[in-house]
Length: 291
Image (tube, rainbow, N blue to C red; front, side, top):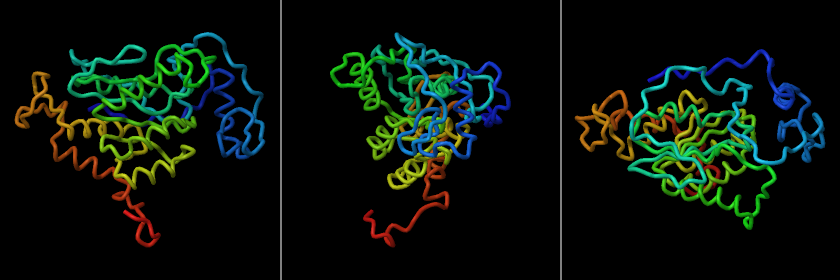
């Protein structure tokens, strides 16, 4: 497995856009809005950080790389060899699902989130799976987010279908975003026994995420370094075993240890990532909360 050590926070803003610089300053400013931490007028505290940026018109490339302001992703490293049957699916094309698939749920926010989905794809591409990535290449910010809007409905329906079909749902909460839709999706699928989460304490609703994960037994980690092995572990518990020829197999003795961990390893990793096993569980009986 590759070393996914987190990168150090950036120390230079050379080449950054004005919006990215303003966002970094907002996070560092102790008087900035603690509700949204965004470079805009906050309705919650009425604190204006910088003038509201003009909204672009027409289709925008939301896959343009964003600077990793806070070192949430590891530095570049060699990727594993791509499996011949690995597929990456993005809307609007219907995903061609094989035996196993992973849905990359989590922060997008019209391209404001760091491109964590690309890194996830690169780290899982040695497996014969389909990665469903809702972060499409282009999106028109003028599209109204209403059910009667055909383009918006197409995107949402694609995501709902892929979430339902996925073997594993992987959440990553970029703490420089708010990601309300990701919060909703976590609430929808937390009980499904196929969810893994990466969310650190800097995310504005990190406490809510951690308590939900604890309540429903969802494995959760705080760094991307820990997330990729967690996805692989969940796939293994769903029966994804790859042999030394790169084929799916049901026989443990044919397992390629470089691509598939043992069931015991997978279950141990998932159990170790439960919040209740990290020393943060509460006594629900004392609070009068039903199990």
